[in-house]
Length: 112
Length: 113
Image (cartoon, rainbow over all chains, first blue to last red; front, top):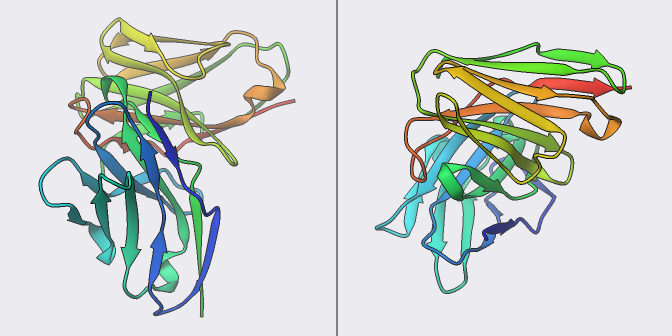
């Protein structure tokens, strides 16, 4: 069975500072990993995904993530955040029939 | 934006009442999913469908049933709502399993009093 752990429930950061949101997973099979973002009162939208190949994945809005198989991690990074990045971020791993197993989420709070 | 709508968007009901939530898609995608979102739990899978009349249980399926009689519609039914089913419910669709992006609807906020 797959599981996802997001260790930080909230991450406060100042505008234009770098940020890293941590995600660790466990899986007994090959994994496909995803990061989704949820803006207030909206559904989720895909930021990026890792399927295979290069371990550094670039996504939308300047975000990137690195797949580390030995550490079973898939941390999300952005070199310089904006106020508009304030949202909740979910790491997920693909499970049976493509259903996703999500982490509990990290709320990114960007302060001016 | 993927064409996914959910109805109703908000509902308040009483314990013991049956409730049906509807997810409608215009993308003709094969896979459809129902998740619930609760603070501290992220999203958890309730049921999913891999085709018309083909459905299966997810992690938190107790107290819920689903039906899919047409490709575009996936219904979630709470036979007898309980306060523990107060949550935000999201529908998602994807064309392929495993590797494909899932597209999410706007959500339904359900309150069971």
